[in-house]
Length: 387
Image (cartoon, rainbow, N blue to C red; front, side):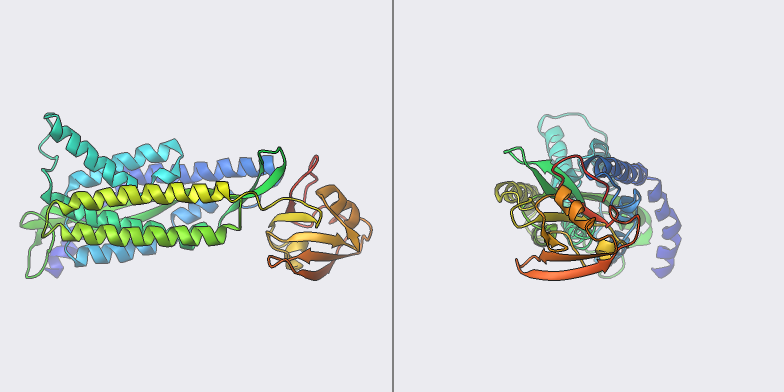
């Protein structure tokens, strides 16, 4: 059997010709370019380079795909090639819209299932490659659950690190800080498919159809996006990621149960769709109804972000803190902040409210030409100076 697998591996690489991979790369590059343009418009500087999204696309998600491939192949989960082609098409359509929140297995797989049911319901003549209902959907349902788990892990591991600052208008017309994340990830899966050189041996495969199998790499792409205005993004993104992981576990378990009760597969797809939509709407509602947290006030001026390798970063300033005093002068907006900085060209001492609302002190030596290059992204009240 080992030799059979080795013989099939070169053919599996043909899956990399799937246009999903190329579309995913283009979407990642486009997302980086759009973010860069928005950052320069909102905060007058590029906070992160354009290729961050591309690095995320080929990042830790590859390792996640490797683990899932071992689970899928080891458990003998054989998925009909129709599902790979159909889900790939839906992924491409979702990616080209730029709405990465649609690139969730909880949306993609149910759409394909609904299309198959619709074709069957209305007696539409379809090619023989379209599978019958519902027995062969078990493998697709399990892989849907596994990809939901991968999505949740990527939200926790990747989205938290790479949020981008932006300025938004509140309903009262005030400027407030916000954090935006938009990521797309490549999760390549090595999936057994019917017909090939690999024969069923002993316990393998457990789930599938036919007597022989081959291997195919499915370059699945997943995505996520969210704007957070009420809190630092870390907490809500980790909470959302955990919810998506558990939804994936539940969906995969129910899908596996359809081996004994075939029509449970519909429950698996329904729960995945309803659950992912509920998580999406709940997260957006929390972000919108909890109010705007990142606003200037009587206590000081809010720090929206800190550029790396700058005096502000060396001073230990972090996003979400509020500068109360600069060189002993109370500041309430960006203009007052920079005026206070100029009071002492060689040295600046700051009093800052940290995330716990406690005052802390920090200071750093400045040099000629750095007075407007501290590396702080602040909420602007007038025409913004370059920070």
